[in-house]
Length: 539
Image 1: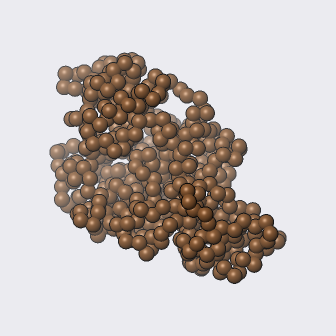
Image 2: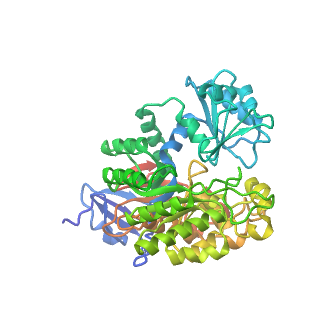
Image 3: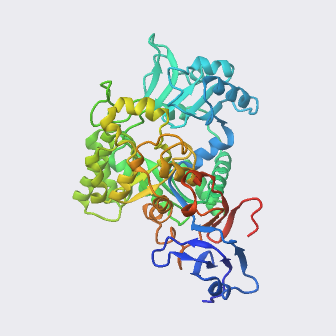
């Protein structure tokens, strides 16, 4: 094979994340893979007359970041077409955003996404409030956590939901004291309602993926794990892959339902895995929601909260154990949504049971979110090889923590809210965003992970649980690649791996922790191909 490169990068401050060769100046790329990593002189000698030369201008280079828990396709759609409610601070703000958005769309449903359910709750917002914003069309808005949603009166009427409509499985239609519909939907009542809304064609979702992928690329993300896919998601991703229009690598996981038999669930995912199994698109894991969230009191705790309340496991426990063992036996990764310490305990017990029955293998089963972990369970992550898949952006003293979780848990249990450092020190881990629950910007997330505070002058949430910059970067690169089962081809910059890399405008290792969020991506390369370039960057 010729040592002449198709592309070279020179004058870089390259962090390869390869322990055998951690720093370099330059890279050579051929056929979308890394040919050599070394000095400027070494790499310049591998160029020829047609080689593309990228001058990093002394800037910092990393492997492309990998976000191992996000909702790329669905969040791309919401980014493209829904009213943005992420910055609203009041019901009046929501009303204005929806009223303004309704004037820009001819769609029957007026939709919005992103309000904070920690500060705007059932006490503040009702269907009548949404009626004032849009009285003549159905309205549906997601809270930022996607475990809460609200509709207006027209929305409930359009779907035929009345006060006599029974709650769907693992969901709740919130009622007023007199039995009338309040407006809020909890947990699976949300998805039950969404399924009854008009279907859209695949070109809508194709555009959603392109918008979402562009957003990822602009923030240095070259690979993701879509944390909940079904037929439509995979079909659309596959079409874009076949047409050369998929600009992020997509691993994926599909939701398992308590109503499915073990055979039905396993065979469904085996079919997906057989059909979608390339380096750009694959399904490799089974997704289980074991509980909900603190904001609507659907988090499952080991002991009731200070008000005497607790939520139930969202599965029959024996059936859950059978499912986990069966998927593990078929060499699927398990991807488990756990918020409360009770759900975390059940998830670890299930992984332990699978190991006992099937033997241990490189599964790297993942527990996502981990808002509350009993300290006795933290060593089990390392013992079982279970991955702590964490979203440290949430580990900050905002309303859902200070006004809800902490009062409900009391001071002793509150010491173990988002125990990120303890989990990192125990076993395998990955850092992710859960976009669109919150931003996917890795550098905003890095700043909070390393400070757990809003700014230098504000109080931190359990500062002893702060991570280091290096831990976060590895959680987005080599550890993320391992957890997504693609470390053999991505995650570090070394010979033979895909040329997925980014150039950023400041070195995070040399940046003040409270300035990390300001770091911007200059260039994103996927398999040797440019997928994002910041305006003004001419390297």
